[in-house]
Length: 518
Image (tube, rainbow, N blue to C red; front, side):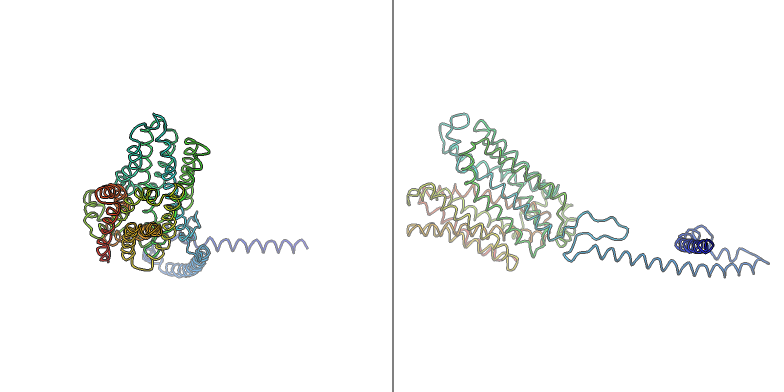
């Protein structure tokens, strides 16, 4: 019995040793072949009586080499099949961004490209919401702040102080937009979005701690500068990560965050200011913005946004020529492109109409219709709700029809809004229609024009998206500055309707130029 057990144990040990030798044999033979001289030198190395021995050695070596070759081939086929199995298992039907191979390091991310794009839209929409929320929270309380005893308020020229306070944001945003575009192109859209959000939070904190009217102006201007960087970084990030066929929908969804902040800002600001006071209100707002920036850092670290394949290919082809240009040369090419200028002009004209109607609407509703402040706020909110609804819908349409046609449609709608403003003597319904068309026009123009600008950058090879969005932001702010000046001046010389109608006619004249864009 003991001999039988020892016989079986010896047999099993022999089998294991043989299997181990077979597995090690290919590696040994490869190393041995690298060390030994070539077969041709060995075959001719012997002489005389060594010829027969040389033939025998070559015959034996050839047999061993054939066997070794077969073993190596089998092992290679087995190794390749294992690699293919691992690679196949690492793939997912939803299109993951990284594929794991046999010997390569495993991917740390299993988030699909579609999910990353949705995350980018969410981040940009949240940033735009916070941006507009901080800017509009001041609307119901700024009159109280300016009317406070000095040094926080002013005792004389309160109207001038209010106008200067509201203009500070647009002036700083317009001035800083080109700088934001340059910084975004030199760094990245991710960095610009996060940095601008942090800057917005710090500016809001300065506003909470301000003790003089000058400090309030500085904080308001800093908010405008941060807003320019938010627009450049956020819109560039969407343009980089979304291909042309879905870019419009992404832009439209991101714009809903801006519209929601515009809708909620006055309500939240008034309620918090009444219960908490100025400092606690804006400290809380600053904390929310900084928490949003921290969440952006975490989410972008876990799932960093990646360029869309089409956009990345186009950018690589165009970037070689763009990098050779100086900043002045690339800006000149951008400013001399007729298609870019037509879209940018549409942004300027539409915001000029908005800037002309906005100050006059309060006067008209008070003097001609006798509405209280609450009712006036309700009427103005019609434009915000219309904007909130039309922005994503027009973004969806821009992926399925001509984007220049949609931009032209927004110009026609804005001219219609100016026309109904002039027809307000027919009844309050005409003014409601005016405000509703204004919001729809803004939503259609924002979603379609921002997508169209990215398409034109790809088409003409104009470099980074951030520069064209900086130009659009300049046109946006400039329209809001020029519109009230021209509208109020023409309103004083002629009538309140003349200024708005004059800019509305310019919208109609510009529409054919936008339609010619291919």
